[in-house]
Image (cartoon, rainbow, N blue to C red; front, side, top):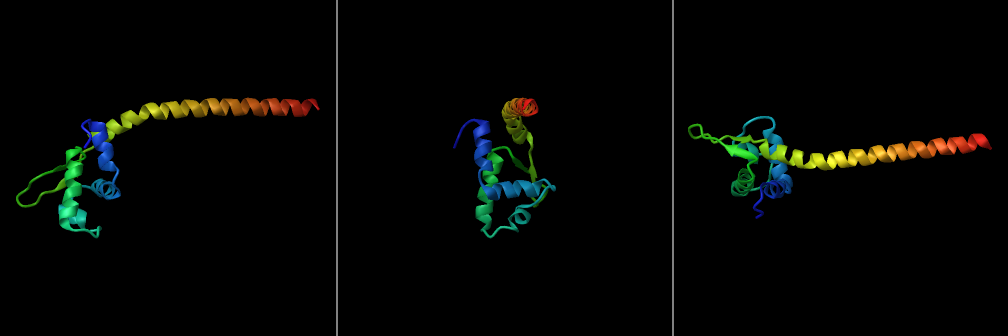
Length: 116
């Protein structure tokens, strides 16, 4: 397993079941049974997914008597968003340059059509 936090988070998010679990947790805390409900898999399999998410810091398990609610932790997702922001700025700047280039081509084309 990767040892840097960003790699660990991406590895945890690579599985669609884990992403679905996180999506469910955006609605609020849930028990393991509630999280397992939509999946056709054993409770031990769901628990393994939860352990991966917990190791990545994406969820936290509480303890209230016998109830062990899971809740979403957003810090690792913010780190991914911060990492992606650099690429988002790059692509936006690239699209802005492309837009300016295309507008310039269009002006030149319109100018040459008028001259004919």
